[in-house]
Length: 487
Image 1: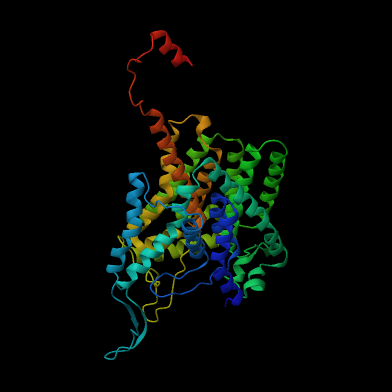
Image 2: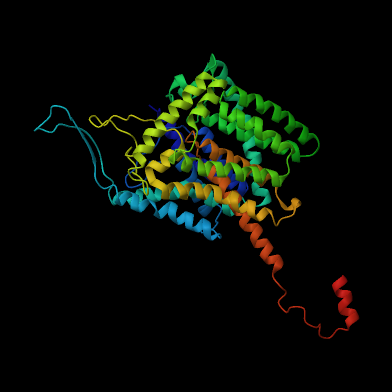
């Protein structure tokens, strides 16, 4: 049960955001309003308000940043992307939830099945979705996209992209201190500060030790965050000059050991494979790898639905590495099978909220499945329409950057956008196993999309012919005109 400080922190965060927008540049204020809220505010705690979604650390940070942009920074916001494909995905992400609500109006009723005739004993029920839920879901979907909108408009410049990388690097280096403390003494900081533990404590015990969690939803979330920090400091180590470059190189080595201490096999694997890519590969190669990873993330659920993923071979490989992790992976796969069976009953628009997408005991209504991967949660809740819309919005910036990159010179591709693209693609891969989609993931997607849009706009402006074409120069001799053109 969260203590009074937990709710107080949620209430004062809008005031913190106002101060950030008053003291910092616009780019830094947006980034730290979202990243600071994600790292500092209490998980799980939320305000359950009527007619709108519950307001938690993510939604409060996003709404506060949006309102501060309007009323403190006095910026007009543009929520309409330039690219038609992204517009269609945006419409599907928002409007596609309406048929989900309308096709789930009936409640789910659970009753005793054995020896109950002719009397019916109702043991539990899950409410149907009503018309009033449409407004709540639409507001919730829009709030989710606020970091995407803000980053697309304000963080897609060279300054904004670099500020994202620097914020991840600095935030991660600072956050590594409480992470080390929890590794040594056990993950208790959230209990000491906010009065409760946010997950199952047993899951934080690994290899006769502890993995840290600090104020995030799970240790896996912290490990993935430290992975993004590792890539960020590696980027700065490669591109910063002089003493700063040497210090960032030391930070890269340090963050690798922090990532190891997080004891998450997937995040460590990402770090081992992708950090050399950040340090040595060209920007084009990074974007190509990111596009390939995004492609895997998109098509895995489709292949999984079709039964084309070799699950046994994957489990055998995992078991050869660690029996403990193989058991965890098998548990995920088994739950996915049950959740897929449930999702296939309403494949187009899904089951909606209130846990209707889960497998429930037919008599008691007890939850029989635990959803882990973000993809199966979205697919079960909003069907193929919701899944394609969400994954499309996350992957479209990578795809458009990949296509745009082919017409750009090497020097024109920002090293910071290449790293952000890798971070985004790796998060999409991790979402196959975990629900690690965060506001900062949406911020990365929006920044990459805005970078592509600005690149296209710059090219169109450069290719635009002069107002009067290449006609004769009136009042000058040929020699004068020629001299002017050379100058």
